[in-house]
Length: 354
Length: 280
Ligand SMILES: Cc1cc2nc3c(=O)[nH]c(=O)nc-3n(C[C@H](O)[C@H](O)[C@H](O)COP(=O)(O)OP(=O)(O)OC[C@H]3O[C@@H](n4cnc5c(N)ncnc54)[C@H](O)[C@@H]3O)c2cc1C
Ligand SMILES: Nc1ncnc2c1ncn2[C@@H]1O[C@H](COP(=O)(O)O)[C@@H](O)[C@H]1O
Image (tube, rainbow over all chains, first blue to last red):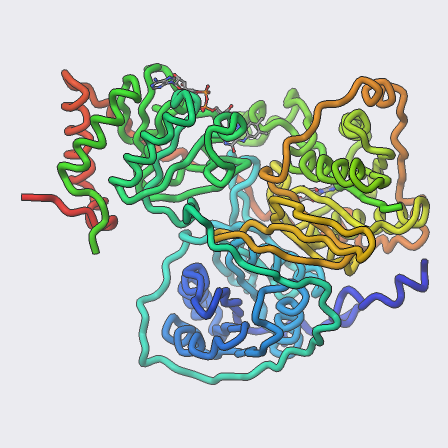
């Protein structure tokens, strides 16, 4: 057993003992993409990191990795990077933890950023957790605020305890300091195609034989339900009464150019799929408009939607807690209110026309 | 025989957690402890594989002595053995230190009952809420890492290959992996079974196996507990509740109320942001 342990790659790729942390400079943002299209969160992180890099007077680096993704280098510059690492190889065609984390580690070891930021997407969290363990260093998940202080420490602020509290997490003794941040929290800089900088190619140091996973296929979601990116959500709870009731909500969602959300009990009852669930054990959403119909407003639901720009609550119980966090409340039977909203919305042509 | 480890954590039921208005700290006392919601999905998935292919299922948790209740709950559902890793030395661990101890525990469980082929974790805990422990454990064990899994499509005990569906924002990825592997479970994966009567009877008598720091032969004490945790909480506070000025719309008819709502919404920046157009 002891021998088997030794044969494993050493965890902790950095020298143990005294390390000269002052060599670590600059901020690295790992750019996430699928089929050569970058996730918005990558550019949002670059925007926020630009501000911090200027404060630190240190370079802002971006790492673009994948297969046939060279065109993203230009975009990374346009969104604020000073220096771009490009790792473009067939082995990086699909995201796999081993190959992608290996490339990130190569860059971290060689170019020593003091901060590494990754989008808190499913893929980003998968990757960040692996990298931080290998380095090893501290990682703060799902940050909603990022800043650097006079000691060059990353102040990574995130919600804690079902968003009842907020905490600023520090990583004082290790570098790089790592954090992931959710999509939609930060704003990207306006694209400036005149910007450019140094491009450094990173050949991935990994063989296919070292990777035990294979992506068989990617199935684009049928209904295209993407709560996290949705700008309008019409959500229903037990008050909706049945699977058929959700068709009514879908109709309103369609008219408003949105998607349907749900509470946990209705998902568990099988009225609608799990991918629609909003809340602590579902998705955390930040739409511009959230309409909650027949939802009581339990904290586990509210933590998932409280940061919506506008919340409209429809409930026949005037005492329902959902009203206290809502901007607009309608006390009434949703089976009367929703059809009226559909009619009013249609009259105003709310569906997105671009 | 297939050996499956399931990592669980006992968490306070967040519905019951309150903030002390005077000290602005969290009152955990009185909040009932439950097994983390997602971890039960991992356990159910392990039990399903056990039902189909035969397997030994070991649940484990690093936590306070009172977490033995969580272990017993898993035994009642059908787990074979439960390990409680508990010692003051482990206290104050962040995700890096937790994943180190959990990894060591899985190694040690492998020494006792045969190498662990598959590990299940939850997608995340509802108190720590990071989702970092799973990837950390996979990394330390050098297992294939399969996060955010909503379905185990197939498992072939002969080739030792597993096919899972990973849930991503924009779709589903079918991934094949060679064991040993670590899976983190989403709520979609299954519905945890109820405890069976024999299970409940066994759980009532069952004494979880307790391991302290002294039970590990080559535990690096610089990597555990507070000392092994690179992250520290600098400051924490109760977020200012943005007072929402709730406007209750009252009109004579629902149509009037609906009109009023859209009139109000059209007076905000929403139409511009959402590309809504107003006729006329
Ligand atoms: C660990 C844990 C995690 C959880 N995670 C989540 C989560 O992620 N997301 C989540 O949503 N919940 C979650 N829950 C469950 C949560 O605590 C609540 O039980 C749930 O949010 C309540 O759902 P609801 O509002 O649909 O149902 P109810 O609380 O039953 O509310 C139904 C509401 O509909 C109203 N109503 C009924 N009929 C009508 C009508 N015709 N017109 C208008 N209004 C009507 C009623 O007045 C009532 O207010 C979790 C619970 C636990 C313990
Ligand atoms: N103390 C612990 N003991 C055992 N498993 C844990 C512990 N903490 C976290 N886990 C596992 O790691 C998953 C992710 O936890 P977290 O990173 O805290 O969100 C959980 O769902 C558990 O499966």
